[in-house]
Image (cartoon, rainbow, N blue to C red; front, side):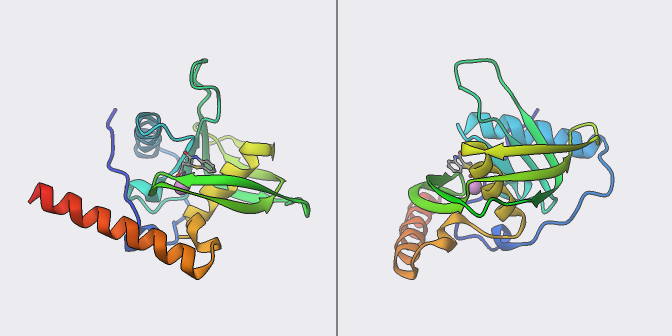
Length: 174
Ligand code: GNR
Ligand code: NI
C-alpha cells in the first residue's frame, strides 16, 4: 500500500468534478486501499479520490472510534437520496483545508446509494456524523469544499492563510 500526498487548497484540481467509475477493477481497489491508508495516516475520518489527485467518484470513510477495530467504508458512484429537511450543524474540518474548522449546516440525515469495494449495490441510511461526513465527501466529488459555505470574508481569510503557509513550505524545500 502507498501513502499518497493529500492536495490542499488553493489547488485547481480540488475544483474538478469527478467522473463515475465504469467498472471496479484491481486499479480501483488499489486506489481505495491507498486512500484508506492515507486517510488513517492523516487522522481523517473520510477521503475523496480527488483529494489525492484522482478525479473518480470514490470515497473512503471510517468514523469509528480510533482505539477500536477499524471499520472502513467504501463508496463508489454514490448518490444521495431523501435528504432530511431538518438540518443540523457540525464543526467541520477537511484534510485539504488543514487546521481550519468552521460550523456547516447540512441535512441531518440522508440515504446514500452506492457500490461497495466489491461492486455490490448498497443503500445506507445515515444520520449524525455519518450523514455529515458523507455529504462533505460528496461535495468533494463536485469540486466543492466546506469553506464555500462560509461568508466571503471568512473564506478569504482561510484561503489567504493557507496560501501563506504553502509559500513558507516552498521556501524551506527550495
Ligand atoms: O477528517 C475529517 N473530519 C471531518 C469532520 C467533520 C466533518 C467532515 C469531516 S471530513 C474530514 C476528512 C476530509 O477532509 N474528508 O474529505
Ligand atoms: Ni474534506
